[in-house]
Image 1: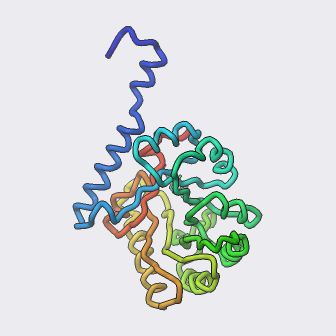
Image 2: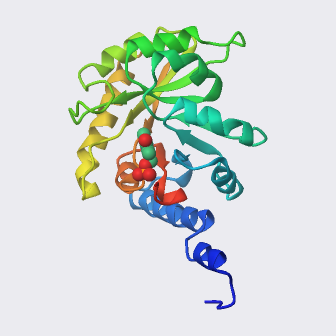
Image 3: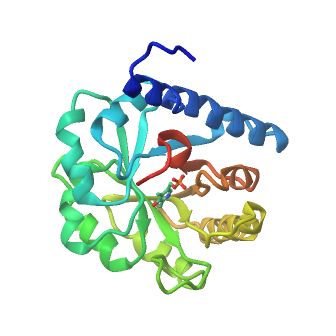
Length: 244
Ligand SMILES: *Cc1c(COP(=O)(O)O)cnc(C)c1O
């Protein structure tokens, strides 16, 4: 402890930096991959920056992160001008309202949270003239939690079939936010079920669909998700610290 440092500096230096946090997250990802014989490159780390200001996102970028996720379109819009010089891939991970579809399509390169045919259609209609396709994931709700968004397990195959017909979207997999359990091990059956559902859609051999991606695992439970086949983990707290 350096006694002559000012109060602000001292209190800041006692908080782990994003670089330190990221190193710890990387260690955990690496260990989980190793346990099940997967390569680190098979898992994409998306930093969930909701509630954190643009300066913190820039810091995380400088620490080496390139994929960032937000859960609200308007919040993303407000941070974007300050970050326009960075080569970030933006992911929308929260529920999308149909009146925000056009804006979402402008702001995000990936949408993880397709939970209805209607929202998929809105996104499709909002396509830019450039003809660029938008990679999307279907959000699945297996916890039967009415407060959460997502298609039920029995509806998701049909939703996949409908989304596959939309020409400007590219169905790339599934996403889940399981119920919260004290013991992350309890989330394992949800991750496993998500993988099985992705396989059912894959088996339907829909044109223009690749079910390669499983977006699952957050700060609390991403090791279990990686063990169960996650290709994308969404980590907020572990990188940026606690949200207010
Ligand atoms: C907030 C959020 C995360 C990150 O959660 P942490 O527990 O902070 O890692 C991941 N996915 C979604 C959909 C979120 O809303």
